[in-house]
Image 1 (cartoon, one colour):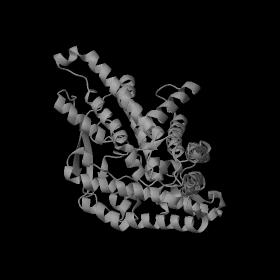
Image 2 (cartoon, rainbow, N blue to C red):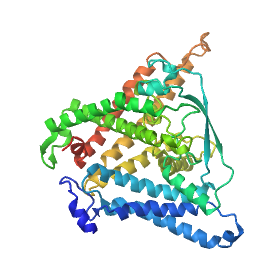
Image 3 (cartoon, rainbow, N blue to C red):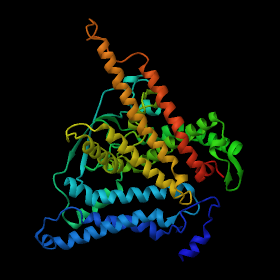
Image 4 (cartoon, rainbow, N blue to C red):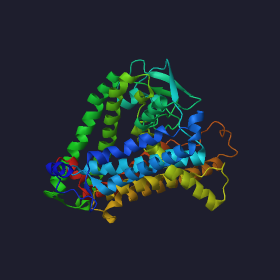
Length: 461
């Protein structure tokens, strides 16, 4: 039956999956999350006497299920591909890697290294009287209005959260707790919350109508413009015939930058579209945390003044937990080991580089699954994120040097206490800097997507 189903699906002639992989089957797609769910049911410790007597058997079963789930997630992109889509094959790799890493975080890293098992969190929203203001009001740059060009109705709130003291014990409560935790991949409603869920206590809860209005008047037009630009450049400059295209570097330099900007804009608006659509669909579940979708981006791009601020506030942070556990923490540990810093001293270089190295690996692995398993063709994403990491470290060094020089030059001045260390041109230079870094360095990303055929698929060919 599986072979018959696979033969009925049209395979893209330009799809280059890892050699030896086969078309994804429903069983292969469902087995990892189902196994993960069964393991989650056994994750909270048992308190009843009867279950405590079987604790060793439960512990072995839990670990066996978790290891199996992690293995099944990791093998998804190594054993399967989506025959009719390059983009979905790329995303299959992200799902497999993200899922496997999350399983090992939940069952081995968090419990054994930090003694942490996720607990339920309840959010409490109190209305704020703060008005949304106008779009150019920089003081309200984090408002939903400023982010989406529309004014929410009674959406300004102050958020607080309370954590449940206990963990589920009965099988019914465990089944509900496990299902909620697995469905909430962002961690909303649990102490496992990622930074994409809670940036600030002062936030906005737009209505479903506000989100629909944003999609129609803001997201879809930008998405259409980006796709039209990608299609125009590909058809007129890169297209040769079915399944073949010219190299990215054959484009004139201005068009390389334009295509890179269009790809970045497409990704930003596509994430926003998906985020808002899920928020609308799950809005009837309120006040359940699964319906909680705070703004995905917390600052407009014209308010950003550094590469670091772009990745912190101008881009989504949906993979932040993965990068934190497998990149930031190891990077900080390594810096402290090499420099002799104590645990209470900041390790910013290791933190930054660790986060970007982990991101480079994740995205390069996804590219690896759609370039025929050719490592050299999959390194564009790694070069992009490595370059961004170096740029963040470099800009912080330059900033500290500049501020040290200004502080020294102000010594003995009567205006010292009144004058800020910032100069009028800092924001202008910062904006030119981060845009230049993202566009120039982003060409590595675009080059890899052209090689993989992702740009061809986005162009509708």
